[in-house]
Image (cartoon, rainbow, N blue to C red; front, side):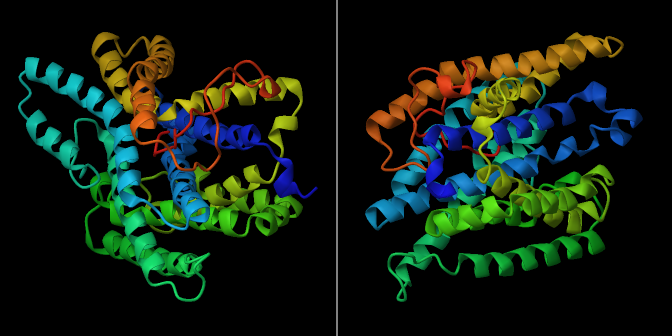
Length: 396
């Protein structure tokens, strides 16, 4: 049996949910206001700001994988259905957070909320601040959901070489896009005064990260056996390449010129290699103590989108209610509340919306098909496979 055929659906879900769990934990660490000290900035937690970059790569891999799988199964892609399913996945939880935030700030007579709300409604937070600062990444993802289907539609309509695989130019297109985006980042760094909003957040400066996930997904779906077997044989080299590419984030912060130009390229290459490496190892065969820890991280990763949505709200409430002198308490409350509220909100808002979506707009095919049912005993009681149709976004 080849390596590609040896992993179950649940094993694949575990691999990807672990990465999502790691990414959301990195985001929580980065956005813990009380950890923002010189010690934190120079210490072991320094690279945690790049959790969003990991999300971008994984999201590009999985979202494009849904479209690739649909084309392989049916010979076409129902783009309208894709847009509706994405909307029912993203919007319920998102607008719940926005609605509560707007209500609170209206009571506080904060009139700037109406401009921020407009930016949220139009999903342009990567260019203009929304109700919460971390919503910029949701804007990047939303633009990606528009551009990727347009690209795939163009490739399908103009395919004459191979109707079974009209996406063969995707790796070449990625190289062109990656070079253009890097060049634009360099021009921005050269001629525009630095700010997060102009150098770190804009969609046109970050799409290459998502696109690299698309390339990996293309290799996975259209050259799967060769891709996975090669990755399995070269997994040590792949993990070493990942470590080399990710090394700069331990040296430079996100505000350094090198990092917000070449650094973003280095990060997505490193996280892409990490993704390939995870796809090439059987982490479900890890020793039981390690498997329990991985299952816990994967379980958090299953709810990462909802946790990402609500963690800014939790941070704001904690900053208002707890004194800065209670540093340890603020950290503990922030992490606990972000995860708990995120999971509860997902079960109250996101999952019912997804079940409604599956009733009226059922999935034709998923990247890795899995049903909610009970926990998978193969991976320990703390982990459950992803719900059918729950595909990741930036924080999912």
